[in-house]
Length: 87
Image (cartoon, rainbow, N blue to C red; front, side, top):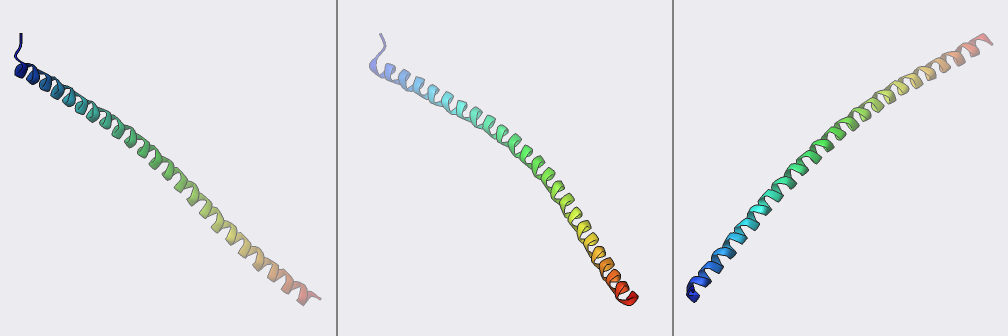
């Protein structure tokens, strides 16, 4: 039979090994979580770039519409001026 001191030492050794394995498992799990988060962040960045392009297109259309409104106002003013001179 094993001496009580030896048995205690074996128990501590087994506990240490289990603790190290659990720590290693946590490292692996954390690494997988980090990789998953990296992919999610990359996808979000792609979506943000896509949204930025849409916002830019909307801004360009707004500028064009403002220009058209300005031209329409100028034409309306010319037409009103022409009508006044024509009467």
